Image (cartoon, rainbow, N blue to C red; front, side, top):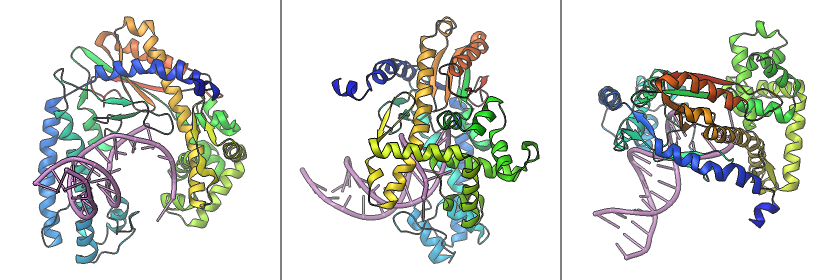
Length: 414
DNA sequence: AGGATCACGCACG
DNA sequence: AACGTACGTGATCCAA
């Protein structure tokens, strides 16, 4: 306790993290219901497709091998079939990752089959087979929310991880439709809209970002307009996509190499792009420089709620380590502050008399999203209350916006 | 033989 | 290599 007080961390401990413990306990005990039959049907279909694809891949490879082994897969693709390697793993082996395979796609029909196999195999092995086995006697799945697992202040989820359930594409939608409200109940899902960019706007005081959020404009279109000298209405889909990549890359301290790859442009174009971005949003450059300089002097960064991350590597003589620490410094302030905000919201939700009367209970947190379960007749009311609590939990230099949905399944609630 | 650990790949925000 | 996580599978290591 004396050490916490000395670091000014006792308030964070007493008024945020300690009260949060019982909220997390309640969420873990509550769990989420799943549709066993929907899981079974989905697994049945996926299993059949995996069998068919396995036969086709082995046939195209001209011999049997274990297609779940990256080592054997590399041998087939690059030795046997003589495809051109397009990247290495951190360990120095020839990579067979999604990114590499997509570049090989035109060269051989086996490539598309492998990509498809990987998607289905991931679904089967990580979600469709294990999750139904983890159902308790109550027909529900109970995760653990780990409060001390991350460097930034986020929660993590394990046993099973319910923070990485597929959501993208038709397969993701179908997966989330397997998670349901219990009998007589509905789910309400509320997620913070672009909370990390809003946190960045708040800390940096960047005029363009603040204005765009204040007017509830399309932030990526606005960035594109600034970048390409246009009116936001005149921005093309491609230009908006580029701006979106930059906006998100910004939060991680993305360099020109990664940007070039993401946008399929040259290194020089990417460098120009980044320069122009910071020239026109110069407050951001200042904010980043100040943040890193203060972190170097103090040895740590501080989030909205006063959470700290020590970053001794900022002083590393190894350039790569030092650069990584600089990116971590920036990202931690943003990601960690967003984590602070949703944790405060969780406390507000848990303490809210109205939600209590409605018999609404928090069941999941997925970094910027809260999922509530409530009796059917109360769900709409509870959702609206949840949204209000999340939006008003703290006042930043920009408004907090929350998107809301309700439904009988997690997919419908989105 | 079999548990521990690493490498790889990939799901999410 | 652009930040933060969890986990399944295969490959490899190694103490009892």
